[in-house]
Image (cartoon, helix red, strand yellow):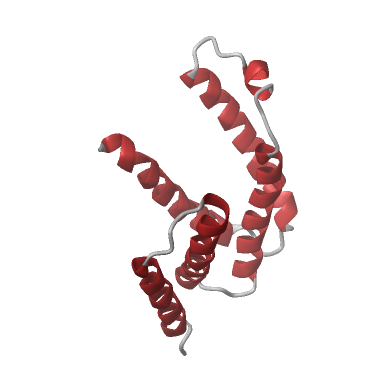
Length: 142
């Protein structure tokens, strides 16, 4: 059970700090300049964790196993990061931006799961879509 739950716990905890940090990027700082620091720290932390968790590991050997995904993921992560930074600079509240994107993302991923991975669209998912859309309406009411 722990091995099933801890990764999502880490995602939630990391996302809380992520949102705090994205909102705290100085208004006068260019978001892309900020991300150069972010990715330098991320690359160093990843390298340290790779060797800490893989005693005697060969990172070059790992790089030889790669496909297109890590390269595209690099661009995607930049889009995520800079999108949030610009959203916060534009005035989105931290309590709303994440919820809005998560609801829209949840709806889109139901269809992505169906189209790319042959996941079933069940009545529960259809009701979930309706709830997400209703939630978006409620959260954006003034």
